[in-house]
Length: 345
Image 1 (cartoon, rainbow, N blue to C red):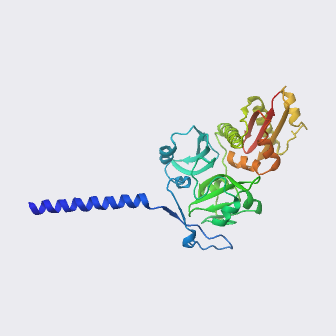
Image 2 (image 1 turned 180 degrees about the vertical axis):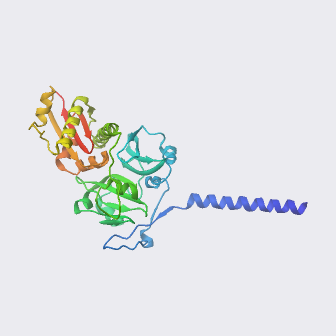
Image 3 (image 1 turned 135 degrees about the vertical axis):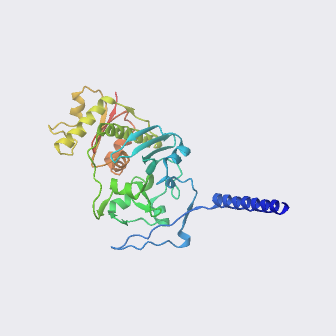
């Protein structure tokens, strides 16, 4: 009996000691990720960077949520402000605080990707406000990315405004660079599937690829994207030290009609098919205002991509950030977008 008792005590000691070692290792080991070599020809060899280029960062960095359970998002950030439908079937979980705005793409309880702006989130190895020059010194900007079924190519303008880096074989970081100061203003983290679906760059693929299906929820998607554009616009204005805009439902309806007309009549212009311009459309609804502006866009599949396209163009950026504006109405119809700004009397 004494021998058995001694053996049991020894066995318990070994189990406890092994558990302590495992917990210590789990807490201390950094998350270790290697980058892929830049695509320079029709064939790419995947290889690790030299040891001094390895990326080490804490496990609470935002990109680690990609491909993980949506429960981890809730555990970290709480329940979302709302859940919006999206074109490709996932839900956008919307989080908004004073120091950040975030959209999380969730489908079947899995995180497909995230979009984030603001300095209140951990996006290591990068930081909002990094200059493009700083980023290029540390991480290879990818001109082409190649995966099993497809590859993407970036234009020179993409490399300046929307470059990408690979965080591992599954996670891509799309970087939104503000042309006004060449600094990182926002980031989209996504898996290969999401990248292929939203197609922000020129894409070459083998076999079949998913196209946008006719949605039963178009009305809900359009309403959601209009709200997202309104929210992101106000967050960007607030970050720039400007007043937030009031939602104006009257001009929002006018914006929606213009987006729908552009889609159905097959044109893209600030002038309506009957020759009316923005001032005419506002006069028709008896709106009193001191000044007004309008942004339009087409063939973008979500609000973040549309917003950053406007920010990358001087005229649209000026409208987004004009300090005199007080009201905003947004109208989305399929993949056509219209923003209308007012400075009220």
